[in-house]
Length: 368
Image 1 (cartoon, rainbow, N blue to C red):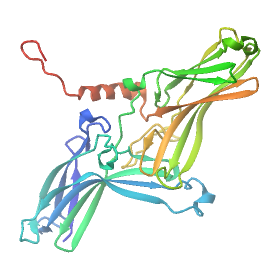
Image 2: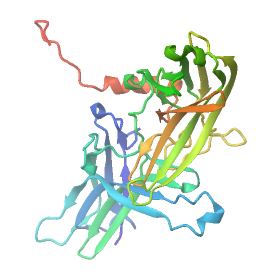
Image 3: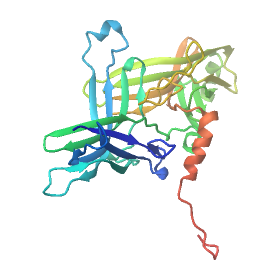
Image 4: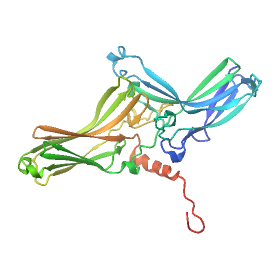
């Protein structure tokens, strides 16, 4: 007789405990495997072995967003990996083929890797659950329970579980350090840009300081240079099969702003502050109703974010283009795209993550 298998989480909670990507919170999947008879309540179920594991499934199909290329392109590519290790929950005693079970509850805790791990992929922090439009790329997680009934009957039961990563929160201090760079054009003008921070979420303001400085050794020629316009834009680059032999890149411009200048280069240089808003996705439908999310994917206010998986990679770039006397000079900086809204979500989440760190205990003599 086949068994009825269900996985339940903690009371009034989710399977996912802690915050993946932040090691101090000990991210883990916690729950309980419930095995019951599939028909009635008195017929026992033969159980020999029960295991549980967290499985990651990744798929890519770069041409899925094009109707013309979809039929001519190669088929969808997918991989399946076990995150961490498979956990043995039950095994019948030696010498017996199975145990007759009327009701069985098996608690489990699956720890999610939280170290960089280097070349060992099993210790790296797994990428977040994500599904791009038209399913060009997706990462999907499942809790897989394997039930062995006798020698030949083995069945697997999968339960979707969404996993998010919290190491890209824009309120963390490592993203709030200013980043600056300079570039010289024709030995006459030096282009310098500065970013106050370099992690942005949906509807976050992006501020860029642009400075043009003349070369003091060529001041006469530098003052004749005309600053025509300055353009800043944010681009999204998706690299499919980035670890394979033939990676495929797709670059999409998300937002752009152009500011006309039309002035000669001042002797003291030219400084301006330009800004735009990081794009966001409207999660509500035409009637203003927030639809129910998919069981295996969290609901994000963006179509994508900075992530690196086994089959695809998503990165974001801030490009600054300056038109000087019909000569274009561009500068590209890598920024981090996060799916979390800074004002409504990042501050309370960051505080909870910081409070999860081990605290130092003060002894009676005042020392730590």
